[in-house]
Length: 384
Image (tube, rainbow, N blue to C red; front, side, top):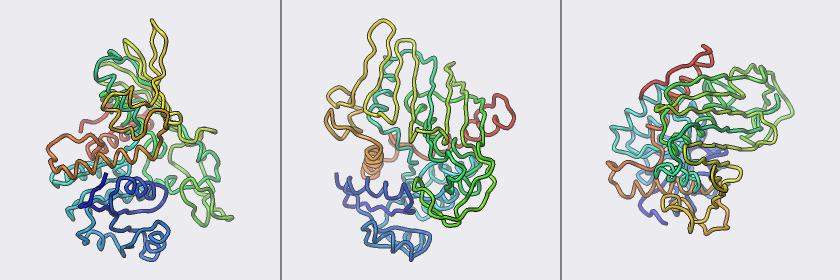
């Protein structure tokens, strides 16, 4: 798959920026250049990543007619101002999640997106596991029956110790919620995508395990461990884990546990959807099997095999059965969908990828979760 008329600009080169780059290269999408916090740093990262051009600033990149799609892979507090600049410059944007720091910001971006005539995507790429799409298709066809219960978790351990540090721990950079907005919104987005259910209200309990953490005097990269022998104690207000009850429109119920302090869980997103006819269960650490649960017959593990999957799931499956696919392939599938849509040019068609509307919905959910945790009661999720 080649996209000769479209070039991407990578903004940010921490953990996720190079992952975007790798997926784009697999698709044959050209890269016009990259933007970093300084021109000097951009030049160094461009050399490391094999990118020809390092822009001196975002403004220089926006002025380049070759740069068509801007991939914003920067800390959360930069999503709103940078996405706003990109849209005002008339460019397409693929923004990392969460879309913004507040729902007021995401609402403003959504309004800009609707009037922009440009593609505005949020990188909830985990939707694009083939068997996640298969689960959606089975539910859409009625095979699961009326959904009674949705439950699951998103668990990590990379912030287990008080010596673990990352910019996400700072509310000024990551937002008032952390585990919930960083990874919990992935679960909420995925479950909404798979089931078609909309959350009506939530009851949440958020917990900060480490009231203070030791921040290195020299920063390290995400998942890269400490880069310094010196530390300073910093108070922490953001959530290390949360438990959330959900009431969905139509009567279904849900429960989510989200944690970044669960030892041994590196990146485990799991859901189970219990319907009147069968249940579906999936886990991101074993992503190539979908468990189909039955009462009156044997359970079935459906493998990631295009010969056995629906056409909808096959669109996100790049290899034959027995050839395992994982996280990098979700980025490839997400971006393939986005760039095909851009090339097609008919933006009146409802996109299959997550948009700023989805990003705003997750911010409204975060608002309700944060309020519920403070007030200790069921809290309605605001309408769009």
